[in-house]
Length: 286
Image (tube, rainbow, N blue to C red):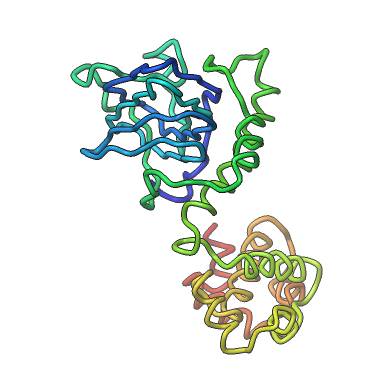
């Protein structure tokens, strides 16, 4: 899945208490799903392995993966769970319920299985603060009915809360493996605001505010963005200049001055290097 298409969408979220010894076997969810064991015990069987389900267990199940749930005979587990896609999939023509589950693998409609997350996520882990996770789940509880003209406003709120949950979930599951340094994330917001409101500040203002050395700052910045700080600033300014070339009557000199390039010659050279055309040729070609 292309990251530009990543837009998690929740269809169904609820609290589900199992009965003593209850089993839910040969489940294949068309959507991805997340389960928090809030109380009780049980086991999960998937991928040829058996996992213990205990209070605090957090389970991620990719779309299309066969799995079984079996509750404890004496103290059955309670699921707080949600069913979602990493990118919305319309299954309304095939199912009356927005988060369908197949219990007969031979009848699975493979073309309706939701997309997988680009990175591998742990199958099961344990959370420490059960209350925090429970509150997050409860903020987007949703029936499995399709959204209608009567429920779309509530659905907007649910999806907004779910986005917050997924942000928290991914930061927890990925930890430092694929998550960018949050300090750089905040700094990028500040840097872009500076660029939009005027000229960027000297680079030392940014890395000194993070108590970083210049070398360490450049290393982390490039790791997070793929650019050096100077390249990032120029890329941002050229992007804004492109919009002005396309949608305003400003002259090339005025655009160069607006985005604080040292000269129109430097602006033209940088634009050509990044876009492959001079500003004038780009404006004419579009």
